[in-house]
Length: 305
Image (cartoon, rainbow, N blue to C red):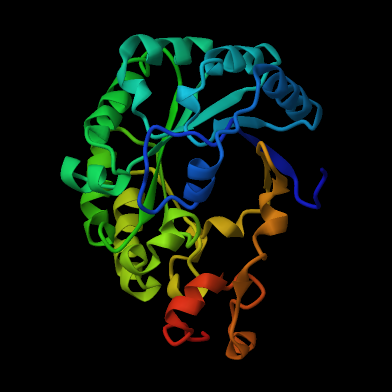
């Protein structure tokens, strides 16, 4: 697949298995209905294809990639083919085992995206529905940091904003900065999978989380690090437009067990706008709002600028 956008990253989704059961997981329906996992030979072919497409970054995700037995070998193969940036998207639990973390890093990973959804064990473990997951994730970050004196590592985190954690976002951010995180990715829950099943319980209004996002951006910016915000319309990001992730001009291709898709090409799917958005100065930039979100809350909180 070739798109009109410059290709930057190919994300290989290894399979639909995970060692957590997050209450907000947008892929939760796949994790509970399919045990499909790619074979190592399939993943080798995916990595080879990524190189042929001249992707700059290769990323391994899932599900949870670190519970796939051949992950270290897949990383070694990607490193052998010469990828300069090799990323793992992980909940961090397996990284709490120092020997495993060392094997992952020695294989060639130099970029991590840890999923961190709370600043306390009680909050994070409640959202992941996995007791001990917070402490394991923190230990995983600690183990990665042990190697940063000898290896350049881009340490990032992803935080999904729900009704339960958005008001603690500044505290989460302060914790992550102290842990040495380079960049924070954050955005409201996507209403699919478990998040669709639990939509009334987990989905906050975007207008309510906006001020907490601004505080996080200010904190991260003052620390000299980076932050990207996903799925927020521009009318709620005034004065913070430069942090809207969808404004990027490069593309990521998702290579999953059951689909192959360009993120840029598919970002407009299942999004909607109201008629008055046509008069907004951001109309040509903004993708609108997820259709399922509008089904839940309507358009009232979104005002054209």
